[in-house]
Image (cartoon, rainbow, N blue to C red; front, side, top):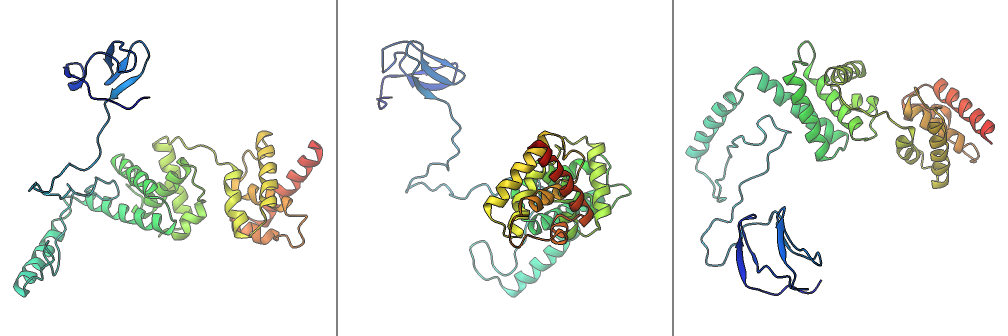
Length: 312
């Protein structure tokens, strides 16, 4: 499209904006505004459209307006969504050192602020759970967006009284695991329980409670999703991982992997794909990496081998 030129302007009541004249700069056709977009009715060229301006406020050198922003955005990862007050220690907002008298006064204010921080026991439990979710997300190297979703899920569980009779740590770990399942992030139940403050049985019980009571739209896990992490752990060649992926896809299409442990079946696919190597990983090592028994690896391997032989 040709570069925009400046034309006579007028006010458009439908969009509440000042726009160019009602003739198209390309074909002199008629311009009309629809859904905040100004376009020519003849040639279809878009002259101007309404967009959200997310830039900083425009400031000039002689403008005395404060350049400070309005603060950090709201977050679900904190019990007050990031609106709490933080009291400093030795320096003020300008970086100047405070006097000893002022520091003692701030210390007393900090103590009273900490005592009045929680409006109820439920809010204190919420803060405890969100801190636990933040710790688990850091240990599992999850993205900030997943932490936000897990925190929101924990809030929903508390609002539905799912914490009654259950520990905060188990529901927090279950929220992290459920968020990973909902977003297709490959974190097994054992991996979450390994960094959690409770054992795997309590994490599994919390996840089942969330899944049943909140009716989470959790998709079934595919063995293909676990292949990259397992192959990287044993430093297998790319051709072995590719062959294992082909086996897993074919088995999944035929329903062979239905009802199986996805990580265990992925480990069995790697075992079959790496069988031609000079030094393939042992069944015990694959079982430990997938958190299953060696019998599971052996049974899946035998079924997969028979399926591939019959399919050929």
